[in-house]
Image (cartoon, rainbow, N blue to C red; front, side, top):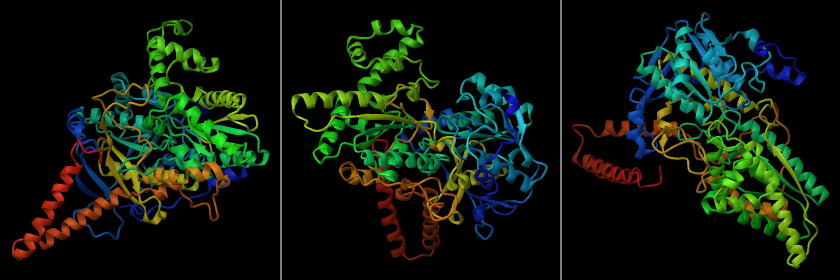
Length: 614
């Protein structure tokens, strides 16, 4: 019910204690003066698609990076904003609820009031549908009182995940004009921030004064690029799921007779499954990216698991824990092709009971091979982005059934001489996303809310709030903003049966890098995890004490701080300019020309569209 939005919650003692916690701000966001340094004009990470992106976003492509500076910074060209007129800003939750989202609202509200007490923050009720219908709730300290540092999106709610069609964009435009908004903040993941970029471009084109800002909030952790190190909610969900997985590991080790198959969230990317593996050390994880890279069939995956079960049985171990991302089913090539056929028939209006008879011969054979429960789930109408309803497809149960059948076969043939294989299945899909947010997510979301104000104060449109150097202490975080168009690529996301097509610029979900440092850590420990039962229990969320400041394992391992390195590079270039100028010696000039020529040649090769390093 709409009337329920924003009502005071009944809080437990822990919730009440958390509501009193006040995150700190990095030095660059403290005080009432906004100091912003603009960098060079940005380009797209997808070099080959830069022209198409610039044509699709003529008003918002190529904007510079923005760095927000502390009061003690000595940057002569920095823009210093001391006058702060009253702003009217709207905020909308898009996409799945993610722990920490409420703190974005809190941080933005507080920043607005600090700089001008007459500013107003309006929350759109019911997500994008509320935006289209202009249904709002004015955010006040009283409204926020029982939502600070709390999980869920129930302060404002959410509905559809997109603001994409021309009709929807026009409705958003009409709402912003009618409400006289200076800013529209869109909280969400890759799809929502792609929509934010399109809205910003449209607003700029029609000369609407509303500035559009995106905030990276998604539990999938797949809105990652050179500007965005982490997403609000990912830290919490990984920690909550890792404790549950660790509990199952301990139970498996105690009973010594069950294999737990655990499916985790993560549709187009397996970051959550990878991170939970590094935190809790289950025996096995199968990443969607591995399946795609190796073109593994459903039979290959089944054999891989069976071989692992048999190897453990030879050491008298008849238990284990296996993790699977929910998007795994779409990663399996033959199943993905089957889904595409099914979805095509569903979109044509063909009833579910008639689809099996219209499948191609090979698809029909696969469909009939699969257990009845999976057949029913594969026939579900696709989600709003045309991908399968992955949360409803019990991949863990499918693999458990196939592994059990294969192990029974091996037992009868005498190739397996161990005990009967027994599986227990779990789907950790909704247990974590409504959790109390971790201290990291509370701090991160609150800071991003403040950055949104700084972006609006600087008059920027089509930007995403960013924080880098996140693995360090909060006092060392670097706050800034990057144009969303700089995060876009023009390519088809080929793994799933989704609707993204060639030639359409979008912010694509970042998949697990199988050549990256995080995956390398998993690869190095895979055999040890499989055979030695080195289970690790990180315990429940910690809000105080030694575990409160912990970050995800992947955040510590990754080689990040892109924005900091851009500034470091500019400092070197400035130093070169200060040395090599009219009047310098011939030797200095020759050395500079030789070095710069070599650097330019190397970078030109690396930046070539045919090179896979970018």
